[in-house]
Amino acid sequence: MLKILIAGSPSKIFHLEEFAKSLENIKVQCRVVIDTSVYSGFPSRNISKWFETKKRFNNLISEFKPDVIFVDRQTNFGLASTELDIPVLVHLRGDFWEEAEMAKKTLYKSPIMRGVIWYKERIANKCFDKSTIILPICKYLEKRVHNFFPDKKTDVLYQGIDPSKWYDEKGMNLKHPCIGLVQSANIWEKTKQLMYLPKVLEAFPDVTFYWVGDGPYRKEVLPFLEIYDNFNWLGKLDYPKKIRQFLTEIDIYALLTGIDMSPLSLQEAQLMKKPVIATNVGGIPELMEDKKTGFLVEKDNHLQIIEKISLLLNNQDKRKEMGNNGREFISKNFSWDVISKNFVEMMNRYTNN
Image (cartoon, rainbow, N blue to C red; front, side, top):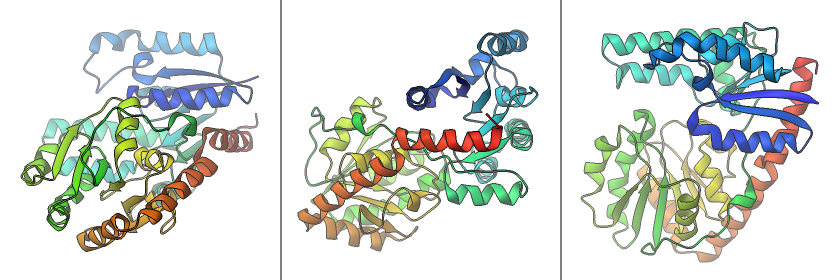
């Protein structure tokens, strides 16, 4: 039986364990670990873990004996994995290079923090260079990879999802009609699109807008939004139960972002049969069908957002039709069964397993 070691961040363990379970259903043995709990090092501040890092890593490899190592982000764990005589598949979730440049201009302006970014870039680029193959999370990102590693093998590995876990669940009372946004505020280029929301709020005084999410840039946009009576910030909700309750209750889902490769909430909203409105950036057009499961709108264009919201609010049949189309589209193309089958076929092509 093929054995795959899967390593990633604590925030993605829920999804990586779903991935592993799906692979095990097709006779692939998996072990899922948090990368930094096994292999630590700079820039981690937990210096006490650094000294036993190699021993923990080597013990894991010796005990599990993986045929393939799958790393979900680019850390010291991934770099150590590339030094072994084992195929290493590097999953790329975001535009690493653009996000690093944005970080230097915003949260990481100080010389010390710029040094941290430089070191992370060094680790990541070594992981990319030494890996067997890079697996971008969307076609848009695959093109970006080829800008930096033109000769590198790549294949798209979309984020999978389990449709059976996305069903109506009562428990949250919202004021209707309402629009729901589920997005973090961790990257300014993403978050600043929310600065167009005031004009939308003014256009729909009788519609309530709810934002679920948090991050360092929340403080930059919230003062411009919370002055409106028809806006409510709900903070970060427990995943997945509270997110499921929220998506059950909203009438329309909106995603206003300046850069995004694979927003999971876009998949979740469609599985919950909600019509979606999302900015036409990054990998978003690959995760929905424009005019069938919802509407794409151009970045920096609040008039298009207003137009599409108005169209959906005034047409209940269209909302229902798009919602049903959305669940069918995501289930057919992004269920873990589909993603895992494609992954194993791809892995066999590139690793000789």
